[in-house]
Image 1 (tube, protein in one colour):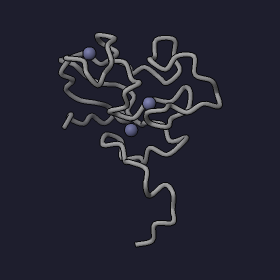
Image 2 (cartoon, protein in one colour):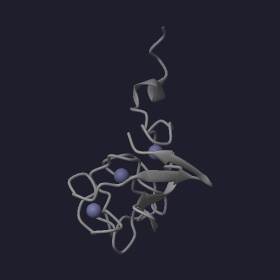
Image 3 (cartoon, helix red, strand yellow):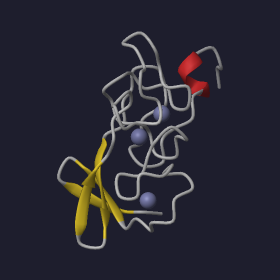
Length: 106
Ligand SMILES: [Zn+2]
Ligand SMILES: [Zn+2]
Ligand SMILES: [Zn+2]
């Protein structure tokens, strides 16, 4: 296989399946905990861990632009339920939504 394509080396988001290439926002909009859905916090949001991000910046964890959702596993994402870093929080999230389809967490 050729390795000339740069995006080949970008990791793939385990949840939405997109490459974490610059400009590819995550397709997962909500996460479910028990019977409640929580909207994810977008990159650059006031409550995001990477708040204050500018239009030109990319998330240093997953490469998304301001206003897009972080890819799952990005260390800049805050849990919409407990507001801790999602990566280390203790909420056990049950499922996530892409469009109107629900997927179980791995
Ligand atoms: Zn993703
Ligand atoms: Zn990110
Ligand atoms: Zn949490």
